[in-house]
Length: 563
Image (cartoon, rainbow, N blue to C red):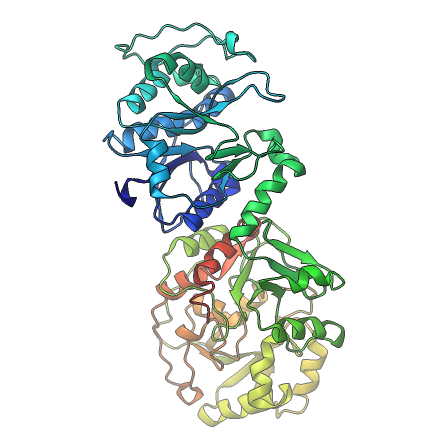
């Protein structure tokens, strides 16, 4: 036997995968990376796949709730018969609402998996109904996996198993039976009835519920087993039962702490290893492996600055959450379909790390569908009557590099207008940022406004995330768009307008002109597909954030490849 013979399969629907399955798979891989992992998904929708897991899936319509629950309980046994037709292949299946707590050896796996081993609920303590449980099963090397699956498909059971062993219904099964029992007639507990029926034929090996391989979390003595299972909906909602599960999960995940005073206006993943605590909780803050903050240090008011500076001075890695990149038609947060971007170190394109090189198209296609974003053809011929200059909110953290380059916000405005004037005499339309417009107008009073028009399409509104119809009006007659690192530059590229980004921190940089001396002859056709795909892996929907998707994506480069 070798490590290729160690196979573990789980099966569930999308919700169960998001809530429990993905953590189980990660924990097994963490302690036992040699194991071949398989998962079968029923009716998947928005699947976060792990690179080291083999996936299969199916779409099925259920006629009633009972048949749905029954099928989800049994589908792993059916799939094991299909995926591992070769009975020499050793395979284990366990409940999806379990967690792996430690490593095991090849020898230990082979010892249990070469036999038909099934979790046995003992009669010791307060357990009154000893019986076979499907929480952990191995299938040996004979025909049991196939007979079990065939019996599950064909047997007709009128009643569910009772609370006591003697209450199991007496069932008669003809193994030559080929008529399938209609799925609509399936009831929960079908697997336990069939296991009870087959026990005499196959002489199951009992794996006790407090044994080496599996413990049940609600039992106080449940410590030291390879797997810990919650075993039932009630246990998933009670903190005392979740405590052991969360403790086990935290051992394989770094502790990520956000300082409440440096974390506002953005959602936090609903994971046990993420904690948002006040500054007074120094014990938790100092024990963090990773910090979590919104925005970055620059331009912060004095009362907030100390917390950001503490994170920087700690020398520990930190995650940054910021407003989304694609904002057109997006609902204002908080909202399940609102997006936020997540990265290491910074939200700037050139200073943060989004782990987003050569990404697939799936996330961009989801964003495009969610927000009805149209990617227009590049304007093949220059048209439009003015140069559109985008200003940004004075004092915003996004202006960090602007201040480094130009000294002041006012110098930026004056310098860029002057540079544009060197290369074109076309009209310049200045679009003010919706916030702090009085400040921007005051700056423009010190500029020669000959040939300059201030757009009236940008109204002052609090909590504005996108330019809306006013921005589109300004885009319509723009010959080119110029900005430092404004988020509107990304929208300009999507509109197909030749765009000039003046800082590599701009998320539009890869599809932008960068030299204002070429403002009369800009590049008109940057490839955008891969740029869009990569940006899709920068931002995450609030329901995805809740289940931890951005962390699981960024975790792939932690700690070894984190730069």
